[in-house]
Amino acid sequence: MFRALCVVFALAFATAAHAGVYEYKLPGFKAAALEKDLPVADILLAGADSVWIAGKQSLWNWRLSEGRLTKIALDEAPQKLAFDGLSVFAAGKKRLFQYQVATKRLFVYQIPGAVDGNAVAFGGAGDDLWLVHARGLFAVDRYGKTLNPMKRLGFLTAGDLAAYDPAHKKLWVARGKEVSAVDLESGAEPKTILTVKRPLLGLALDAGQVVLHTAQSVLRLDAGTAKTRKSIPVQGARKLTAMAVAKDRHAYVFDDYLLEIFDVEKKTAHSFKLGIDGEEGVSRLAVAGDTAAMLVGDRVRAFRWRP
Image 1: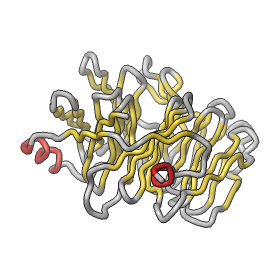
Image 2 (image 1 turned 180 degrees about the vertical axis):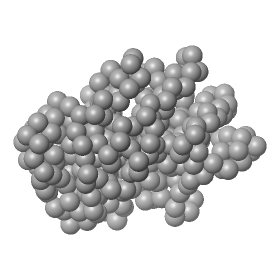
Image 3 (image 1 turned 45 degrees about the vertical axis):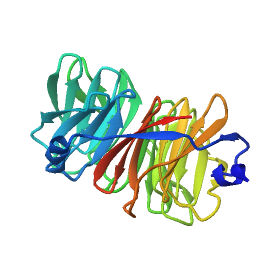
């Protein structure tokens, strides 16, 4: 009976019992300071204790264990965030900001040719970091503090989901109910790979696969051949609202605020009921260690779980 309650996907892995969940809270005056910079555009976790937040005008760092909130003022609204292990990158319409965590130094890159258009996504990691912008695909040179144009893009719009796969030189785009791929080596136009029945809500790359999700299912495509590898339905009446995919674990949040953590190596899942009321829903999810940060409505919430 308990297994039937906990299993969220029709997958053959063991499911653990609901366990304790602790929510981190900012002191009232700090929460009020952050609220003045709403809405939040993006969040990320740089380790299990450090939440980075892209506000309406500033970059914020919330150290969870200390309850400390730090503001880094920017001269442009940040839209997308990335972490390369040393620095947090915040991309806007015209500029890319690099904040070195250890030295607390801020560097600014101009996005070539960016008069208008939005930052859409980051790709890669470490020295192999890429920015997907409506104006083009750029390689981030954090040593030379420049952005090197790799491909002009004129078809991306606000609301597009995108992921760049440097291994196969492909840009993947999800828009509405369609999944497209751009072969950057051939220079061909975007090619529609798949059309699904319901709007696509998430897109990520994982171990040679493209992972997408709608409210009712998770889809996996082979990144090289673009063939569908798996279609995993969400069981019951739940709807999947957000996912976070990393090398060692995958995380999913549903409309009833159930958090599902899947351990890739152990092939086990743990589910946790979050103490969230209301019907705002989760639009962003980030996971590191035993911590999950998420955007619920227009506010950032952070939880630690104990299996």
